[in-house]
Amino acid sequence: MRLRFTSLTVVALFVATISAAQVPVAFVGVVDESGYGGAVFKSQVAESLLSALKTVRVFNVRDVREKFPLPADYQTIAEFASELKLPAALQAVVKQVTVKKPKRDPQVTVALEATLIPTKMPQLVFKAFAVGKGNNPAEGRAVSEAIAAAAFEVAKQLGIITSLRGQVLLPPAYAILPATHYKDRDRLYDRTVRISLDMTSGLKVGSEVAILKRGELVAKGQVVEVDIGSSLVALTDVKPGTQIRTGDEVVVTFMPQFPAKLPLPLQKEREYKRVEHDFAWALAIAGAAIGLVAE
Image (cartoon, rainbow, N blue to C red; front, top):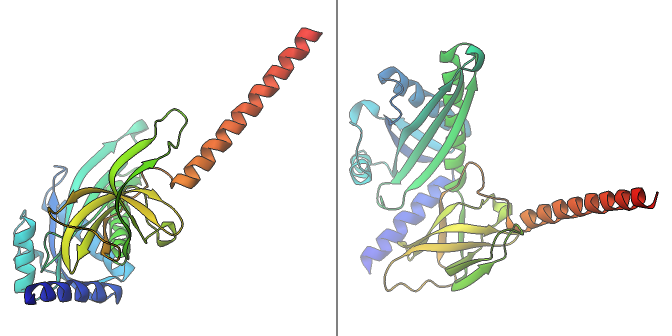
C-alpha cells in the first residue's frame, strides 16, 4: 500500500511540476542514427534543441552531456538523472537526414526524435517526433534550418503532451467506426475506451496514450477518433488482470506532427462535399450531353 501511494505521489508531483512549467530535466545528449555527421553535427542538434526548449518555456533543462555516455537504455538514463536528483531526463535521436540537390539547390530534411523519461517511472516514456525542412543554396545553412525547424517542433510537442491530462469516461468495449471514405470498410476495434481529451485539447488521431490506475501504468493505446467532448482510444496493451474503469487517469505519451487523418466528423464532412461536387459535375455533363442529343 505504501509503495502504491509513493508511486502515485511521484506521478502527481511530476505532472504538477510540468503543469507549472518548472520541471527540471537532465539533457543527456544526442544520438545520431542517420550517419550524416560527427560530433560537430550532434552538438549543433543539441544546441538547437536546447534553444528551442528554452523558447517554449516548459522545462528547466540542465545540460549534462559531458557527464553521460550515449547510447544508453531508458533505465540507465533514469538512474543517472536520479543520481542528479532530477525528476526527468531527456535525450534526442537524429533518425534520418536527407539531402536533395535539384538544380544544385540543397533541400534538406531532418527527422528528430526526443524522449522524456521520468526518473521514478522509466516505463512511462514521453516521445516527440518531427521532420524539419531547410532550403538554401548553401548546404550547411539548409541543414541548420532543417535542424532548427525539427528542434522547435519537438520542443513544442513535448510541452503539449506533458500538459495534457484526462480521464477514462467509458470502460473498455468494442467499437465500430464508420468508414471515412466510401471506398473503405467500417473498422472494428475489439477493445476501446472513451477519454475526456478531445479536439479542443489539441489531441490528434494517431496520438498514443497511457492509462494509470492509482499511479501505476496499466494500459496503453492509440487514439483512433477525435471528436468534440471526447476521443476514442483503441487499447494496444493492457496489464493482465487489470480492470479499466471510469475515472482512471489518462496521459498522452506521443502526438504526431500531423494527424493520421482528419478527426472523423471533419473527414466525413469533407468527403461528403467532394461527393456532392462530383455529383454536381456529373449532372452538368449529363445535361450537356442531353442538350447535344436534342439538337
